[in-house]
Image 1: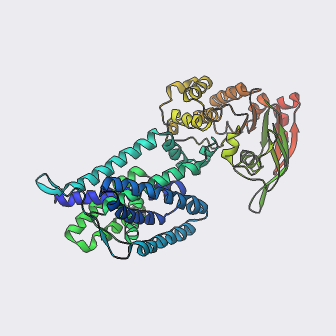
Image 2: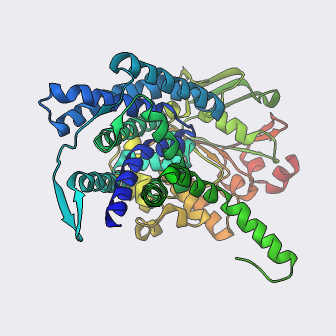
Image 3: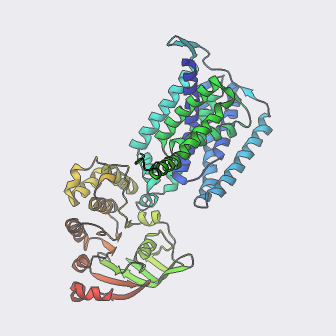
Amino acid sequence: MFDTILYGLTIGAILYLFSTGLSITFGTMHIINFAHGMIYAIGVYLFISLLPLLWGSFPLSLAVAVAAMLPLAYLVERFVIRRLYGDGIDYAIIATYAILLIGTDLIKLVWGSGPKPVSDPIGIPIQILGTTVQTYRVVVFICAVAVFVALRMFFSRHVIGKIVVAALKDRDGVRSLGLDVNKYFSIVFVIGSGLAVMGGVLYAPITVAEPYMGFHVLLLAFAVVIVGGMGNLTGTFFSALGLGQVIALTGRFYPAGADTMVFVVMTLVLLKEPIVDLLRRLVGKHGIGNFS
Amino acid sequence: MLRVDAIDVAYGYAHVVHRVSLGVEPGEMVFVVGRNGAGKTTLLKTLAGFLSPVRGVIDFDGRQVQGMTAEALARQGMRFVNQDKKVFADLTVKDNMELAAYACGESLDQAVERLIGMYPKFASFLEKKAGNLSGGQREILLIGRALVGEPRLLLIDEPTEGLAAIVIEDIFRILRGMKHKISSVIVEQNLSVVSRLADRILIMKEGEIAREIADPAEIADVAALESWL
């Protein structure tokens, strides 16, 4: 059972790293960014190509892949996302989905359609509470916690983080101080994209890289962001870890329903208010008293 | 310092401000008064760069600025204080000042010192979340934030709206401290405050400047001002 929980924490960690960028983009720009999946997938393929060139060093290849994807993320933000700001959510979905499709085809063109496995860079099992687990999975979880703590510190202590926190609720207030909000939103967009690449690369040894990997993780990440609260980074962290457990525990007892259960949870969260409202009405109608 | 020449402002097809012209001299405190829906806030937001006039010219320090963004105008020394007393609620009072200081390259200590000089009670509120401040304290924080970096023109929208009489006196004292030191255009409904502070009053009706009052005796006559609205 412990290995299932640890697997859930690892999946949750990957989902958190990927979802943070989505949550930031929605919180700051109110845009659903499908192109995030493209950055994630290309980043992973780039990592796979870099690995043999950089003496097989996993951390170095990861750092270079993340760094290399940042300019592409900036271009997407500057020339697509920012132009769509305020134009309605449908235009953003169409444009960013198009970018995801182009990215997927680019992967097939450059790297081929077949899956590409990545080996576990540590490959050493350890014993925790009497269960044998892969050290790598523990490291992935620790990385996600470290990112969560670092982001919390960035948004509460660094002036750029504070500007973004302020602009999330009062964009015009920040503008009236003379600060160009778009510039700061670009910075956090690029940070979020870098974290997506990091999540993808860390996930590669657990699964395999394939051209449509961006699509699959996007759907799960939307569920994470909706359950955690759009733009709520702390909520995203706990939502990702919670849904990671949902995937792992469902997968243990009913593997075919692992992903589906995530969307069942998401639907329950979305329906929470209407259900509570309905119960209030029913209880009120039958004169039982107030439901709270 | 500020010259506005025949600006029209519209929301889509709805024209809200019609051929408004006005001027503000250095150190002058100009009040804009009028009933709800007269176009006062729209005029102020246009001057601040949050709206663009469909026609007309806005000249700030000899430079045409209509169409410039709000952040660019703020950097040029024109600061806007909004009507809804919206501070950066998730940040502390000190953080609010830090952002203002960062925006204009002033030291945080200097900005905080000025704020405390303006309203000493803030000395014990610096680490308090700005969202927990009272309406009056939020307004004072907004004015304090806008004064960081020594701007040349302050645009303030309804500073005393919805505040208790005792807090209005605090705001009055702060505005009086600014008089002759910094130019300002203030939209205000409280005619008692207006009559005690104004160098000039512009009365707006249905999107136009219906009357301009510069005579001190007329400005001091609250009952007469009321009759113009």
